[in-house]
Image (cartoon, rainbow, N blue to C red; front, side, top):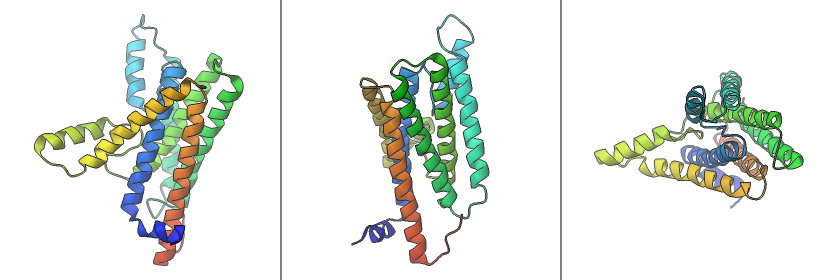
Length: 237
């Protein structure tokens, strides 16, 4: 059986679920690098940045203000750009969706390479630039994932996912529990991987994230095109 036929056989809903879970894993990597390696800045979890900013403005905590603030701005800019680009799409995954995810992968690879070149102790301006750009990339990803619309898997935050999981278990309902649990495990695994890679080099985690996002984008695009060809539907952005 050819790769194309194998992809056609995977239902779109299931394919999108697994791809978004993979992207959730990469968010854990990015946040670990940003928080542990680059001055306590979250690049995907904007709730974390808001909390850090709230504590930092009081003073005396030693927490950064500029980095989290710029990451918030970068994330919003990325989400706005993706929202504008994807607003005219006719399907959840189409050519422009692929372009957005590919851009995220490219940005991660560029940032990882930059850190490899400048070393494990980048200057503050370089560090802030990296976290702001990474946050912009996560904004792009989050907006595209919102269009894909896999329930409880936003790829950048799992608070609502944990809430849904606990509430359902408490009420005796189990629909979607496995999906939510895997999403939580994915971001934990990503954070653990990112923290482990920091022991080797600061840029390693971002490079891994870029490679994984690129692979997920490639698979998603192949699946979309294979399904369209089978259904004999014109490929449109």
